Image (cartoon, rainbow, N blue to C red; front, side):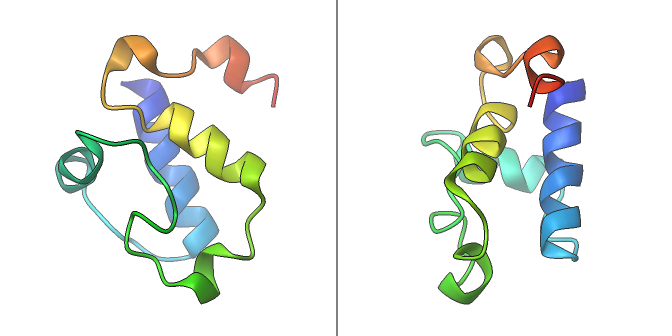
Length: 77
């Protein structure tokens, strides 16, 4: 749960706005991985972020907690 929460916080810091509650976000990515484009963010917003940022968020906002990036790996980024 900690990694999920940190992913939510990181996304909101990057976007400088509150985009979702945790429950809403889980519903959006329940069946597919997080992507900036797939999350409904317009191109003007997400094109400024590197593929690595999107990859880290994909691994942090994984619906299945067992598949989420462990904190030890996250701190290595």
